Image 1 (cartoon, helix red, strand yellow):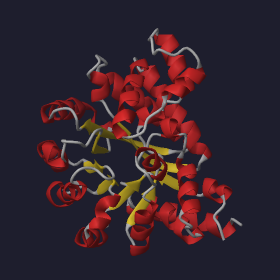
Image 2: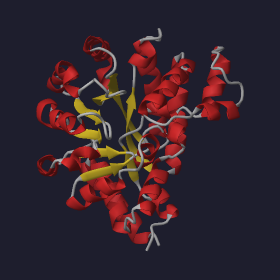
Image 3: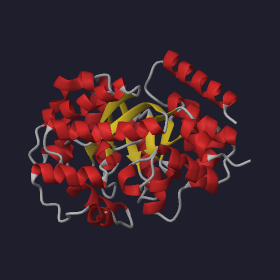
Image 4: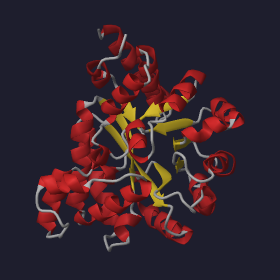
Length: 337
């Protein structure tokens, strides 16, 4: 029996791979551009939507980063976060750990404190809406290791507002070990750590090996190329490493969703989770990603429920909170038709 979209929308879930900057919907982008008098080259919603065109990771990033110019003050960053929470609530997201890219803003003259304080105001509003929300600060891997360390130091006065440290952006010629020093420091100083290992990159499997064995991450963002190395699969199973997969965004930047790999890893017992990545650009929020994956790869109801449970099991919350959320899922599944 196929899993209905209604069942998936109502399923309690966590989102662990969501770039706040990637939730900038055309309507908000245009409104902020007009407010801040930023020339974005478009003057209607239709023109903004038409600009969200790309065929691979590189072309996506060329659209993605210039769009951030409309984010100027704390209220803008807060508005972006709240806009995401309003949508996440409709998908019954109960907990989320959200990426943000401070270097994308500080490099254009926006102070770090403006970014973090604005987003955190949004986080507090999200909690008022019933969503337990936290921030993961990411470094842009196509910038220097020195820049990452400078950003890390700038973040330390705000460490109570940051749950973890991540790594994203263009992986080409920017291997994870480029940032070994700053991640080692972050781990020593008590931050959770994760890294993007984007799909089908040059030396993907080598990068995955390094993030697991040399960096020592707790989660991998994307990372389905791990199926190429059975020993690494055995390692993540033994160490309960989470995977934050994004099937719809995968289908935009490669030829498929990587659903076969996700399904294989899920059936092996890996902590596979499903997330929306940059939903404004891929026009797919978390339940839509669940449904797209379930429909195309014939996931069972039990598979979908397990993915939802994995989203909490792979999160950085207390064991008690995990048990409570899993109980919530079981109660929902028992009542849902």
